[in-house]
Image 1 (cartoon, rainbow, N blue to C red):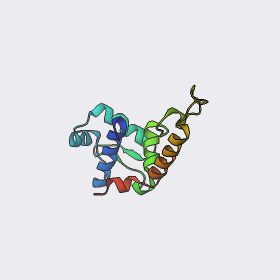
Image 2 (image 1 turned 135 degrees about the horizontal axis):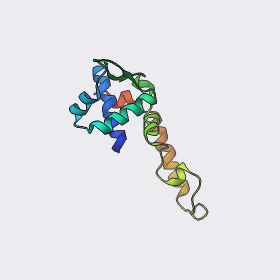
Image 3 (image 1 turned 120 degrees about the vertical axis):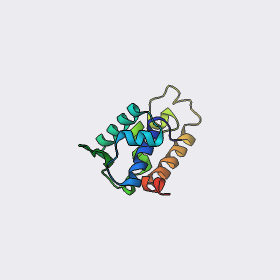
Image 4 (image 1 turned 60 degrees about the vertical axis):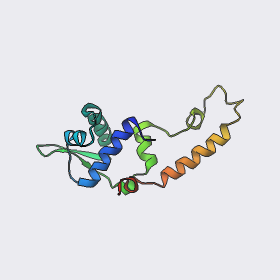
Length: 129
């Protein structure tokens, strides 16, 4: 499931869909009862990834920089956490059990199917009521 930083990121992006205007970290934090410091770091990361843009000034905060329909779930999760994989060998070919592993190929197939599914889901689909 979506947890940790991805959870905070998803909530903050979802909030921007509703309002469509710059929203402060404090407003999002209060709305969703999220830790302000962690949320601020996540919002800064989303701005570095050019999903959000930072708006300076008294009515500043963060707003969407890209259409949510242009961001796949794969792109979003991987930008926050790195490559998606059910097992280390589905992300990294280096494994001490590689020569003896009897589940490598089934796990890779499951991983490929999961990534295909995530590629076909946009953040817009996940945030539209």
